[in-house]
Image (cartoon, rainbow, N blue to C red; front, side, top):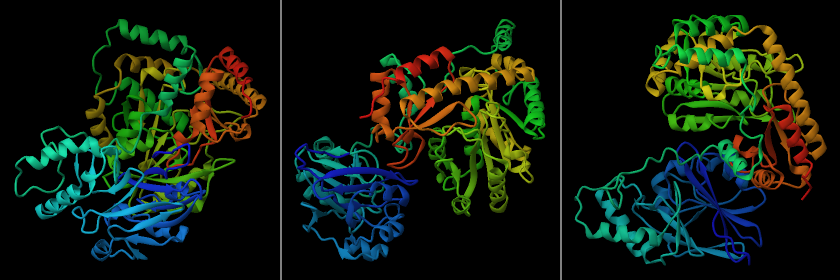
Length: 600
């Protein structure tokens, strides 16, 4: 957010990072009239249009003509019906069909407020900034630590002269909002800029330049995402003394025979690396389990890779099976690790919404997400955070598209044994035509309450496994040796263990759902896994993060804001996720605390 004055004096500024290139889109809104100006639509039309909800966008402005700032322009322009303004030098150079020209010194109204157009050529011939309220949206003209990219030494000279005559004549407390990354201020950049101008520099200098080239640059690949909200809520809950119903951490012990197997393994000296893709006897046990339970034929020598949990199995699969610029289809809401993994791999997520109230996907929306650049689809069932168990019919639709578009399905089946009301877990890899194009990922953590042991597996056809093993080797070398030995004991537990486990989780589910009913928080009853997505709107809350902080600090129960499972602004903001992988007495105490909730 930009600066918002209680006297409603300032324009309201909102920033949205969009697309593969983390391009910043900005929305300037007059707080009195709710008229707005959209700057640089970026690369995610759905998220941009969500950002614009509740305001009337009168104009769309382009700071310059590079494609990453324009990817969403067509659909956004059509949906909003707003005229588009660009500097004529860039409109001509980049073939932009602008409705009006942006000229240096031009004043444009935003409701009762005004912004000034400032021409800053160099990055492109027609680059402009928008200046208002001691703030400026500067596009790619200047960033924290340096100027924007230039194609020639002459362009760099032009840009430096432009910045001297414009940006660095402004007051030090002027905030600069760039086209990518975080804002800075004139004062923060001025000393390094002046030092840069005073130093001799090569006559051939251009490209990506920093004010202080000797300073080691920081990678920008992590800018599009933040730290795990789930782990953040766990820390907040600990600080507040709240019951942790946020992170999927059981507060009860694993099966005694599994713990004893781990102790025996430690005493017997299994402290060193195993074979990179896992101890053979454990791979054999995983292969047998896949054949018997998942109905997937698996050769332990060529198809099973033991990983450091399911998260590593999924990440290794994404890195092994995609190239930068490829696309991955993800059902939304999604477990929060998926999208950062895609960004780190340089691939673009394509989201398919699970529509409420039943969290089902529209077959046409699913079909439209697949294209020539699609390489993977991530399938999580039972589903976190909604608790859906996808049916054979739903998975068959995904399987048909995988075969039609030559796409590999990477599954997250970590909750495969946690099912309710007689539901059946279906592995998409068991469906016709999918054995050679599925990576089936699961692990010990959830089924046996050993989330900290970090033992999982990826089962795939030999041609896929060979690639995944390369990435796995250099990511982690091998999974923890003593816990692979304990995993043997876990996979040999009798069917009675799974029946008792499901019955116990069903009882825990009933305790939490009764508490949510009493608290007035509607939900969809989970079919599997151990999470519930609850609706906070009936209590008058429309900010999931504020509600989660209130619940932890004032009520004593920690949950996860629903928006952390969605991309873009405005999604999931009336939902929070509860976890019921707790002892019954823990859940009963949490329910007792929930009775403190009152409508706002």
